[in-house]
Length: 211
Image 1: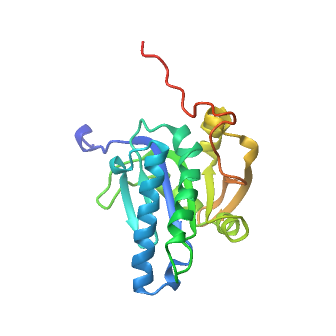
Image 2: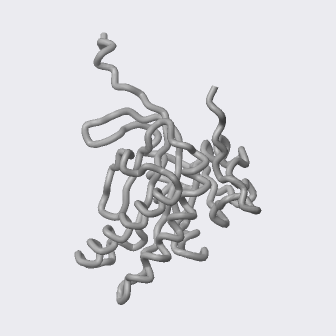
């Protein structure tokens, strides 16, 4: 029988995946430059969105990362503001990449269970996020859509965050897709247009009075 102290802590929270398009086609210097540019863009976007990316656990790969924000992270900021800020940051970064291909990125936000492991968080949440990030549906959106960012949320995030309408989130701005993955079909929602603040200059995030 397993002692209670040996049972790993099961956490429930967001996973944010990002991946650079065609990273493997770059030479070593190009890959190094692309990694640095993506890090700059992610840091800038998080800061402008009001998110503390330096507190996130990040599982880094050569062409991107899976990031795990703290459990109390505001999902409205993460879904409704961070992607749009990243798109703007990529535009600024790409202006400085003279003589290099533009940095084009896929992004996924999911919410689910994870537990600590020897090489990073384990569980269904990171696996599902990684599979949506690698899906043909998201790759196709980046290939055919405008701009340098393709954004997808999982079915759970769409239901729990997007459909609230908070922060100007508009469910009609997302298209339902069924992505073929190694584990079978997965439902996701690809952004037709990136979320943004409410029209008319309304507050993006309402602060509730403390009781």
